[in-house]
Image (cartoon, rainbow, N blue to C red):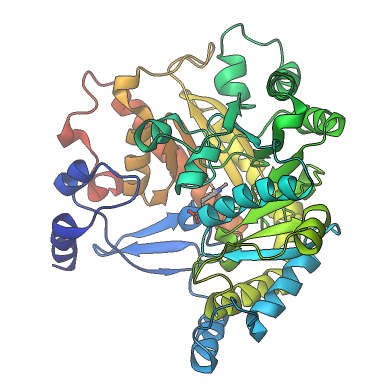
Length: 473
Ligand SMILES: *Cc1c(COP(=O)(O)O)cnc(C)c1O
């Protein structure tokens, strides 16, 4: 009853994000009712292991009383006040200090936003403002990467390199361009020309940055923006040669580095920030998602001394901000979230125990007949579905193998997302070894079922979409 009532309301009134409205209306949405630890529960009584930590954000897992209490206490004390017009409040001041304490030492300031997209809007404005204040207003171009994701506001989508978003959302913000992504499996191994090795491919991708800088002119380029590991693009860990080569390019030119830490931050890769894993020294780091473990919406931009000093000393008023910049209740929850991550040693556990354990178990899935590559870093992992294991050749696009596998996963009791035919996971950081075993077991079952269905003459007829009971039986 609850399921059908919710679905009917949804169908009648709710336009979902990143969704084919009509198709969802026909299928009906899955109704999630509650969650604990690493499991979500739907209105039909299924328990599902959340292999995506919501949308890469529920780092502390579900049902943390301490976060509920932090929110409740703050709602009673001061539910809302703004941070415009020379005002502040204790939770936002304490959160700013805590973030700067955790960030690399050259980062000592933060600008708060309500989301990761707003953080990247802030980045765009800050970067261009910085160069104007430096007396170089012609340094306007920002270089991003194809298939990078930086959010879905106009600036976020423009900085990102998602072609389908550009096609629907255009025209993009002018002065933003994109270079190739360091996606070895998709564009190195399977790409045109077949680069000889991941390492050579990684260097070639870094050379593309230098070529773009030279093409535009160093005096016209403001910044390079990239995720340390691409998340939404498909959990793409660059070859080991990539970041050192990019760093060498950036060192030759006077260009800011923006590391989008919205997914990589707060322990996902076994460090507080992904930049620390790759030894980057970004000038700006947009953050969101894991900052509050998703319990309340909050984002921000961590600003390095170079940019902060100019904005503070030379800038006068920065005409930018959001009603909810530094929202006290969101800030209180974020602060408590960081304190818990720290007190429970979760970041270290990801680095030293859970990350290596996932890597070991996940790599076993690389042996599966329809998996061309299994990769992971920290608690982020990907599987490349292929029709031919030897050549890495993909399934025919019309089979939509990735979506099929994702639907089967859901029905088997696992949230694993698909990006094309790349399956990805990013579970809560509080997952245990036993739960990792369960995740791998469910993923393997789903791969078996996907392979079985893809071998059928017509795997995608609607009646073939697995029902939970059918799979579980
Ligand atoms: C999710 C995401 C964003 C956008 O964050 P929202 O809170 O959805 O606006 C930006 N950058 C990266 C890397 C992300 O994964």
